Length: 100
Image 1 (cartoon, rainbow, N blue to C red):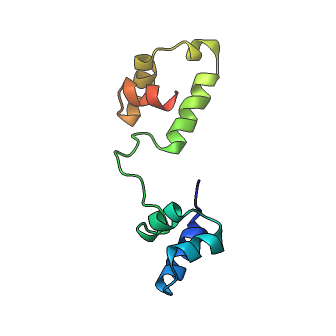
Image 2: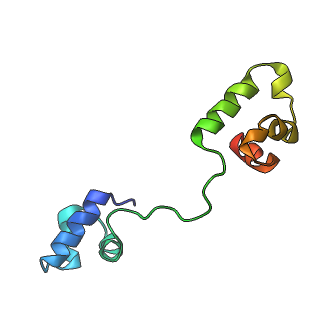
């Protein structure tokens, strides 16, 4: 039920060449609904919208390494971890989100 980016490009090229949806669906082996959908969307999906994460991937990795160090660090509360990494200027919520 998934149509790849390359297939969407092929669908759009065949549609621009004037071929019918039935012809395109049989040529590419996709459903007519997929052909209809592919005609109206860009081939490459848009970047997801939403708020960007507060912690970078490097910070998340550093946080994970720190928590895995010992039993004491694994038992620290979210607030204690946020306090330990106070130079990041984040609260306990981004810490909790990163470790889930």
